Image 1 (spheres, helix red, strand yellow):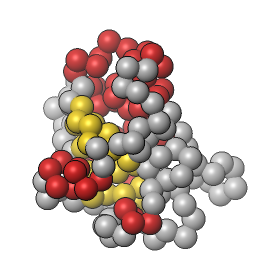
Image 2 (cartoon, helix red, strand yellow):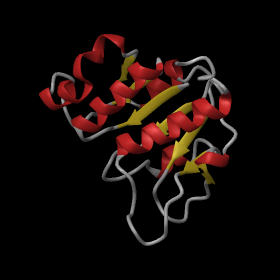
Image 3 (tube, helix red, strand yellow):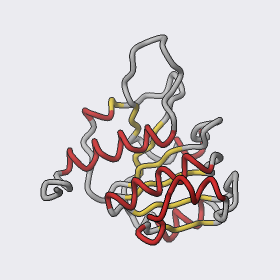
Image 4 (cartoon, helix red, strand yellow):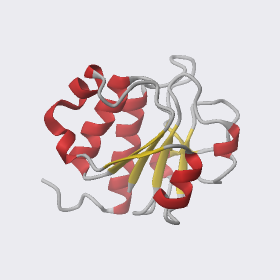
Length: 157
């Protein structure tokens, strides 16, 4: 299982997701351009002292990730955009090698990325309350659902 952040914009969200990845031994892929520098103090603060435990890979663009980082794994795309055909995350048939792809906080995944895979998921929410969840919250929900549904955390404490 891998998390892929396409052009993330907000350092604390990425730092929180890095901490999530450290806790679950999940590779974190960042696709440039980033909305911050990796040395950003807010990014580092959100990740606390867990950064040495993060399997971090930074890619100059989507093409580089697709050529070397994806390695044939299935892309599971997330979108908060209305009108996108997607399955509820808790009902989706995740696979252990999936790449869970999240878009930038203010824009979501662009159409050209959404067109790359039929595997799209959403986090169900009550209608009319909020537009979307925070990126780091969404990543945590989706990753834990994926790990649970694939049995990858059966032996965890």
